[in-house]
Length: 150
Image (cartoon, rainbow, N blue to C red):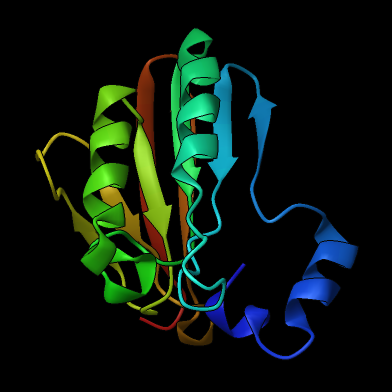
């Protein structure tokens, strides 16, 4: 859920269409965890890091874990000033997440914050005709940045 989706009646509409704000699913031997990180729009109650840790613990039986959220943890809008960003970074590292994937700023960025071990990838925006394709082949994970307007 993007931060603009959470205004007005957006929360109710999102929930009616998609279900829970936080959820996970399995594809093959990979766990995908989708975390609501709209700290400001959810009165400081998001992200739910207790829920995230439970999902990460359960995910240890899979070869790969991807955590996806709209706002990334080094931003104020994540709850960084309340320590939520650092807590998130510690959990991601503790449970050896394969990738932490984000949006929000509409500009591609690959970086390694906190302890420098886990890749954090911010995707470009669809208005720029840009997207990322991941390929998982056993232990090997690769991605390709597709830019249709270049």
